[in-house]
Image 1 (cartoon, rainbow, N blue to C red):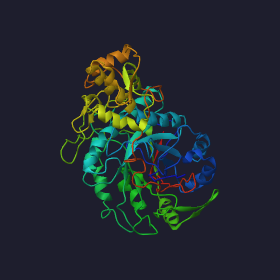
Image 2 (cartoon, rainbow, N blue to C red):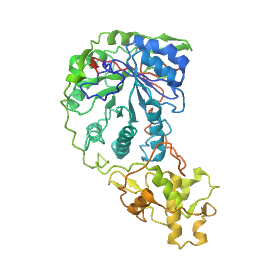
Image 3 (spheres, rainbow, N blue to C red):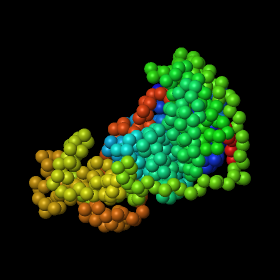
Image 4 (tube, rainbow, N blue to C red):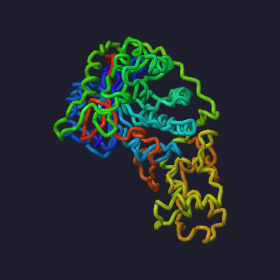
Length: 508
């Protein structure tokens, strides 16, 4: 089990869960949790929460939680220690795949299940919709699917009447896409933009300085950014033990004008040598030199307070969306469609030719490719660079396969041989589309290439004929550091943690 905790400037957030602006979001300590679900291990939480508190932690980040697990004990311990939570929504094996990006029902259901579970705890303040997904110019098209996920999760939180919780993104520090990516996720409309921006930065190594490390340039770049910004990961270990001299700069007056602190990589010592502590047993850890050095610097942070009632935002103008060219491949609008479980189910129900019940799910993809060689499957295609999305591009493979098989079957005048594919397909009774489903199918058209404007009805966990599929681990929450991160919250053996420390406190 792995825990990650990371560090911000000092922020005092209260159970109201109010979403803060960049000037407001100043957190003292943030932890991140990676790999298995550390917040489901009450024994480890009892061991680690006091250590997090010793490091002045007040926010933790979990890279993964099991929405079916019981998190009551750990969340209560965190709450009593004044520690709040930001959690990633994806999993290492079910995330937006930068090599073949999509936004569909499987991820939608995963994301909403995490929100449903964690919203019940007042010390949950937000979520990451992705981590380091676009990391080259060639993978920037994936950012359209990230932005669609942000849009849909913000909408979901509102539609469920949950209290305010933010949805953000954590990015790698990649020079040639840095500016375009930041602008893209903060442009077009308030409904689409991220609520906070996390930067994974490892440019301050050893006894560097504000200018040499690039911190000065990054600070100026984000001075007018609309949403809160912070270092989602930091703590270069080219020099060991790490002196953590960057902490003084990060929480000093100059950077605190822009940044809400940063996330130290990582809490537990592992083979990559980023740890603050090493695990002794289930009840104790051994503090390392990095722990001592970090603790010394973070103790000097002097938080100041801002009363929310008297706060007036100054950065309110959204960024200009980047245009599509050789260095940026994601069109600003339209974004991928919102996954709609009801519509996808309706496709299957009204299809007369569908995948055979005996067909293994692992064979769905190859059969779909075969069928689409015989009929036009534009209704299933999606292209972020052109901004063209088939109406059914967000459905799971089983529903897409039913659409393609049925389309071909009808084009072949429903000949028996047209619904065979060597026994991989079968005919079935159909259920006529009615109501919203009927309207949506008409809008999509027989080819599935029309734009569906009738309100989507997707809900997490709803029944569907769909078979859940998973993406590869490209762009997963642990895409670069799979089990390493800095923090003050160790909730499990060999957990990785990062601290969120800060210099500003908001009284809500």
